[in-house]
Structures are given as C-alpha cells and as structure tokens.
Length: 163
Image 1 (cartoon, rainbow, N blue to C red):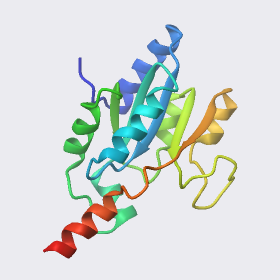
Image 2 (cartoon, rainbow, N blue to C red):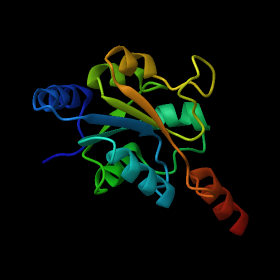
Image 3 (cartoon, rainbow, N blue to C red):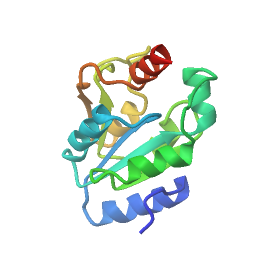
C-alpha cells in the first residue's frame, strides 16, 4: 500500500475511512530533519484516533517559511521518512504556505499542532490554521507539547557551529 498520496488520493481515502467510521487525525509540518521530538509528537497524535495523516510542506513553501537555506532534505524524502514511521498511516505533500486547503479536503476529526500554537487563538502566529474547518464539523483541536531541547533549527545550528 502506498503511504504518500496526492491530495486527490488522500481525499478519496479519507471519504472511505469516514464511511468505515474511522476517526481521522491530521497534523502537518516541514519535518526537515526528522528527530525524536517529531517521532514522539506523531506517536501522541496517532493515539488520538484511528488514522494519522501528516501534511508535508513542499520545498517551495518551506523556503518561503524558513528561508532560502531550507529545506535541507527534498520533499519526497521528508514525506517518505515520515510515512515510514509506525505512527503514521499516510502523508500528503502540499504547496501552499498553510495546510488549510488540505484540511478542507481531508475533513479530519482531530487537528493536532505543537506546543507553540494556541487552540483558543482566532488569529496571529499562534492561530491553528484549519481549526475553523474541524470545529465546524464537530471535531476537536489539540495541542501537544514539544520535547524540550529538540528542534530542527537547533540541530542545524549545532551542525553549523561544529563546522
């Protein structure tokens, strides 16, 4: 079974999963250098439902969000690594700066973000994009705390300082 799906494929798969009564969890990110914080975050996200789908920012959107030095790894490599994790059922690469359109297509039951977001925020940098879509369908929005001291930026900084 393929685990990296196009938007059209993931939309069809989610419709089938909903017909089966499965609880769909969605999260997203760049996942530029996979680390233990990512793995633990995704394990917790997976525990909130039956199926975990992870949206992966494409290379162009990572550059727009993180700067020209990123991403370190190509989008298909990042999606493949995330998809290979036991907790993850499917990944889908998206090209917009936010996963809003992917969330609208998937219609998850649970939307999960990391600890730097606020489920009560209605705008600004702590706002969880797509929370309106999920809540309008009776779904829930959850925030999972980060593993302290684990971040892609921190890893990149350590590599640069050691060179």
